[in-house]
Length: 227
Image 1: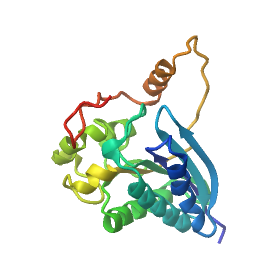
Image 2: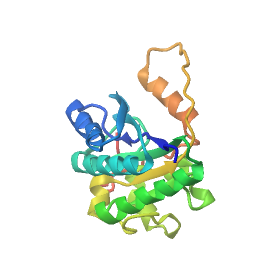
Image 3: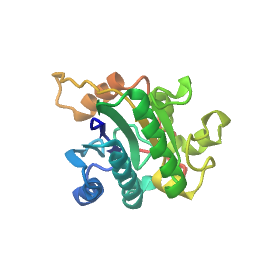
């Protein structure tokens, strides 16, 4: 049988503490056969994109360990950043690379979510090609309200998590929730702006990237508005 490969690109809600970032990213290298390709932290966004590749079962194991470690080290009740987010491991997309279909990749995404929910007690949603309903395909829709809106979101019968606990609890306060998907490659491009304002540049980038954004309403723990 030909070797199958998938890529995993988890985004964690930490972009400033390099020790934490490297500890979280490097857990994937403990899984034999996994190749860590890139660690890309962002200070302003307080977010890091991690990329690794391997055979499907090994990628699922590595992703599970990364989500577990991120939940241990990132306290979402204290996290702030420019990028939309609702979890310590905010998103965890799987991309089919070699000799594997999108449908097969979606099944692996469901396997990962099941383990995360049952073994870690972390709740979350499937999106894009792993979504189990059309209204949950779009990430911006799934993530609307962000971390600050999770208590209200999860109490809505239409937004019960696809995996993990379906009621707002202390685990969600700490780790938030995670969105898992099977998707194609993303296409990135650079735009030159006549401005030195990183805040303005970030705002433009987010408006282009996301299909609408909901204003953050306040921290579910403190009830205070986020900055």
